[in-house]
Structures are given as C-alpha cells and as structure tokens.
Length: 376
Ligand SMILES: *Cc1c(COP(=O)(O)O)cnc(C)c1O
Image: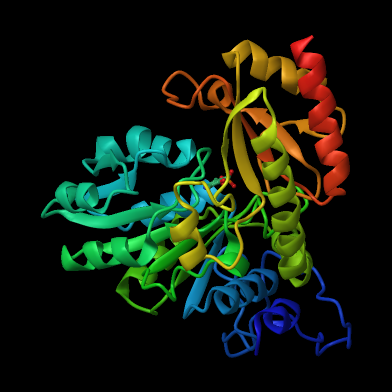
C-alpha cells in the first residue's frame, strides 16, 4: 500500500465489539483475566500495552517502513529511552546543532552515568569519521537541523557509523516520514517528537521510536518503555492517530507555503540570510533534494540589526503567533536564541518560523508589514 493509504488505515480498524468505524478511546488501565488466569485479549495493564498505543505504534511503524515502534509520552522521553539502552563507557556522536533538548538529555542526564557524547559538524563527513571512537555506539542524525536547517547526508553518515560498529539513529521530526525515510537510507532507528507534524495540531505531546529490525536493541527500548513507564496516555495516542490520515496532505501544503515565504524573505532588503534547503542557493539544497521528497515547513532567517531588530519584528506580527514548537496548522515565529538559553550558539538576529496552513500570501503580507513597522 502507498503512503496515503497507510496513513488512513494502518493501526486503525472497525471495532469488533461495536462496529464503530472510529477507534474508541480505551481509558481502562487494567484488563480482565479469564478464570484460568489468562488474558484472552492479550491486554493486561495499560503501561504494558493498550489498544490505542498498539494502534499508534502499528501506524507509525508502517509509515516509516519499520519492523516495530514504541510510543512515549514526549519526544524527549523517547530520546531518553534510546540512551537508556547504552552502558557506562559508551559514547554518542551527535551533531553540533542538535535539538537543544536532546543535547540536555546527553549532557545533563547521561554524562553522570558515564555515557559520553561529542558534538560535531555532521555536514562534514571527514569530521564525522575523525570523531568516531572505539566506544561509539550511537551516531545521532538530525536533518534538517534546528534552527539552521542544515542537512546531513544520511546514507553517508550511516556508512561511517556502521563501519565503526555504531548504530545510526535519526531524529526525523522536522521532515516527517512523508518527506524523508531514514530507515530506507540505512538508519537503524528513527525517532519522532509526535508533538510536531504527526500530532499536527499543537494539542498533544508525544514521542516514538521506529526500528528497522526487531532486534536486541529494540527489545532494550521496549524494556525502557515498560520499566521506565514514560508512556503516552490512550487519549494522547488517539489524538495523534486522528491526525495521521491528513499528514501527507498537510506536509504538501506546509512545503508549498514555506517555499513561498522563504522566497519572499530571500528578496527582502532587511533580511540578511534565509535558511531553507528549498532555495537553490542554499548550501544544503543538493543533499536535501537527494534524500527528501519536499523541503519541509520549517525555515529560519536572520534580520539586519541583531536581537533588537528580530524582537521588534516578532513584536509586530499579527497572523503568526510568537511561540515555540512547530508542525501545527498555525504559523509560529520565535526568537530561537532566547529559548535555547545561555549555551545557545544561535545567531541573535535569527527568527525561526514554523509555516502553517494559512494562505501563503497572508503570511507574506504579515511578515512584510511587521518588517516595515520594525524598521520605522
Ligand atoms: C520538539 C522536538 C523534540 C522533543 O520533543 P518533545 O515532545 O518536546 O519532548 C525532539 N527533537 C526535535 C527535532 C524537536 O523538534
């Protein structure tokens, strides 16, 4: 089946007990045993399994082309569960412009358990090769990156990781499985913040990991899910499931709108840089074109005049909302350095935009008037 069909049907099904076409929400935390002590429906306790989570995991696995998936209560809970499979003494190689929350997990939660991490420019393959250590177990890929939209050559980094005996795991949140399929490019696992495009409505937190093989590493992840307990609620799973059928159509519209907004900004005299891989002049255009079927709905740009100019622009938008996060129907704009905190290396004049599903011309008009008012 093709992607659109899987998005509608995978993990969904008519409820056999009622004939309901839409999945019910199974809030029960516990399930009845038969007189002989067995569990006739396979469900025992909701942290272990529940119908809504099973459906979501089946759907996400199908959409990424995996052998299985594990869902979590947030994107970072899924990141944490992945690193819980490591041993003291293991090393993680990660991109320098990794999502700041993932960097926090490595630096502030796992470093004290003797899991080390180094952060390198992963767009340079010789740098990646040189940074591999004998104890490197995971090479973390995030592409396009946040907030500079740098693109990493997934297949090439996978090759380096595997040659060094490490697994390659990709955070595919920005691209979504519609635009990029890391498992097809050789990655061992894919991680998502379902909070973003998969949830698609800015109303549910969630995370998931999809595996290429049902192997010992995936078993370790299941153990982290079961014993660690950072699972999503049935309602959270149901909300993400509700959004998946529209994912391919939403992504097409996000891409088309972002392309128009990026081209407008690129011509604007007050804008000094636009970071969007869809622009032909972008340093990552070729690699993005090779491994993505669209360039996504995220972009960032730098305004002349640094932090003050960026804050003034954000202060004057009327359709965009000043907020963090991404992937919802509404367009968001944010001054990224201030949310990332003191360790941030993001340029002070940079604004990150999640381009939503409004009409592109309204978004462009809004940015035009805000740029004008910010400069006067
Ligand atoms: C939001 C995000 C995460 C973390 O997800 P949460 O649900 O906020 O924990 C991880 N990676 C990327 C790229 C993200 O955008």
